[in-house]
Length: 365
Image 1 (tube, rainbow, N blue to C red):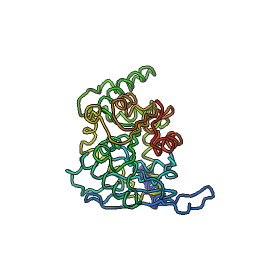
Image 2: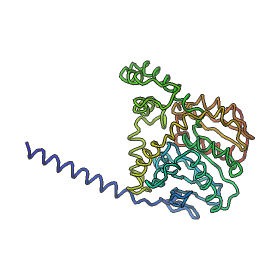
Image 3: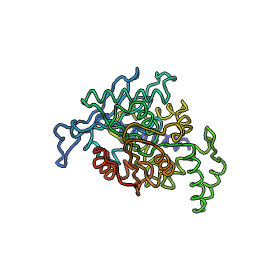
């Protein structure tokens, strides 16, 4: 019996060793060159990982472009604390063909994770200052008077605050799954999930949800938060409409990305936990933009998946109708949940090139 246990330990050790060796082998941490259809690196293209000091903290980003004369686009990822660049391996966006795209890992996240970050700087106000600093770095480096700002989910919260604070720096603000009043969104989603799971006769999930009712108070119940992502993804209303597992769709995807080192991959998940510990989530949840931010002095475009219940489609549409801006556009994505940029990238690019870059007011969605 002891011999069987020893052999099992040896086998497990060898499996762990093999997996570690494999992860090291696929984690060189170097950006992949942009290649054409012939497999050759595109002349004049850019694909790099950059670290700069931002407001006293070393922060990292990936920058990609087939032509650095193109307009510059700064992407603000979701979370808080959840970089998204690694998802482009499985969900290529093609944005680098139309823009010089900066995929910045925000303070405390991924490439920008650092245990020495002063806790008092982990605030929405500081994230706005960081965004403006990154913007000015990009403006100076690529000789642009203005750039484009795109925010996704949590990034749309910071993006809209930045658009209000410094509209003179941007040609336009593009929101993917715009936060409006996230606490109201969570309540709507909770009721939606209860109804759907009852229709499916999935009583184990119904009971779990019923034990953790969501109300208009913060923080949200911890038991609910533990099942929230799984419950959403099972219904196709999470990250993408077809992603049923966060483990397969996000965690494993982060491990398989070649452009992060092993340490940086660990930092992605340490940074997510680190960012969560500063109540940034609750701060975002409490904000009701429909009362607190009703006008932006720059063009604004909302892109939202109809299956998105991570951030309510109906809440975003309602807020958009109240928001004042010199040019506005709301675009519904019929095959998307929370991430149209990854789910329907061709439609996103068409909107950006045919409407946003031209500053055109679209027809009603």
